[in-house]
Length: 391
Image (cartoon, rainbow, N blue to C red; front, side, top):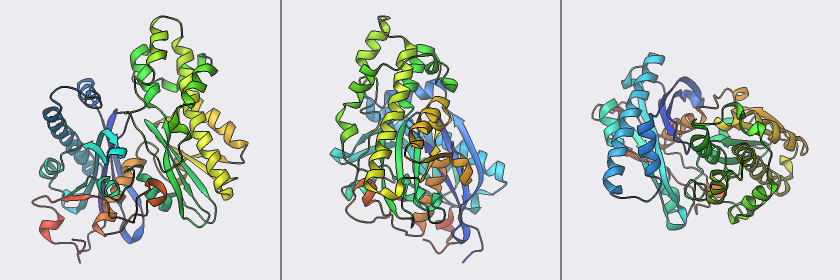
């Protein structure tokens, strides 16, 4: 076997559709060390293309293929940025784990669509690509998401203390890990940034409400909050997953009408949506504590873009304190909150090449353990060179 280290790259673009994030990691000797991170923000035109594909429209097949090629070109630039920052040559990378951009998530119908072009990415970078990570789970009767709890269980468990991880991206997902490090559950709690960012774009002309400046000046409208929380998704028992198919402009159509008619201030709308993120996440945490009492007095690790929202952090911390739960940033575990998901897909690629099966039944409802991913070789990649025993 070659002495080349276990270098893998993970690429991720989340529900917020703001940027393509990348992480180069070394998994040698079973460790997980980040060597470099890089991000390429989407241009307004690129965002427009991707956002439009999240809804039904004309000529979707052609638009999806073109968008996949567009994403591969962006991903290749991120890969080059990572190689440049780390001074690691492309031939040293065993594989890229590319999640792609989710535009439809319909587990009840057995599918989830991630825009991707792994063959194009492999061609542009000369590196083997692992993609289509949700398909195997869906075939086994699972939700196909969230997948990251499988990574979280190994990365965040420390000593003999239970742990909760709340990833606040476009959609919020929660992972619960037992005192022994077992994956107790993982599921989407509801919206995090996606509805907040939607309203920020629509009413503030900004990609997001920076430092919660708008939301902090508003007042939570209990009538709105209670109506939103009455949606059946929040009372569903895990495993469960969601996305922009549910939490989108249609979900807020009544509130948008009121705002357009100046009957609801944008400040109050943003304050209420912020509280929706907090309340839905907290109620999910409380239910899991009741199910698994060892989670009381555990640690809640916050990650994702929403973890930087001071109003979300403050209100969530105050609520969790009542359960004896300490809230900490994932940076205290050596992880950058902006690149944790990219790191996780580097790990998924590593797991694929080592034929490690994922135990996701408590998260997605899959009927069995499974190997997640599909393989696309590059002409000059590790597989073609036969330098690694993994293939």
